[in-house]
Amino acid sequence: MIKKILTILLVSCTLPAMAFEDYMIVSEQPVKSVTVQNENIVNVKSIFTIDNQKKLLIVTPKKTGKTKIYITSAGKVSMLDIKITSKTTKLTPHEGFEYYTIDIPPEEIFIPAPPKKLGGNN
Image (tube, rainbow, N blue to C red):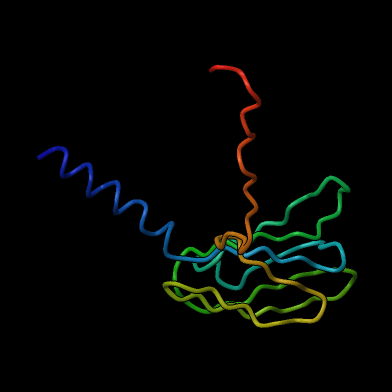
């Protein structure tokens, strides 16, 4: 009985993590601040890179719904609409930003063949 309960708990705890798509937003200009209209729906974090420019944002959905993301960069405020459903995250295209899903693996993965055995009796 305990095994069944633990299995149900493990499965139910991982379901929200598998339900939504995370996104990475790349800005052409460094981002000064990011705010979200409804933080109960989505979480947005800015990331520093090696060159110390805040051009990357990570979008992590929390639950389904619609909200807006306000990004301040170079003295102007850009507004991005975001809609989160149970399986997809949709961002409206905006000039100066590129969007990449984080959850989808790359289409082509090159796996080299193992090296050939070079003689010997082993």
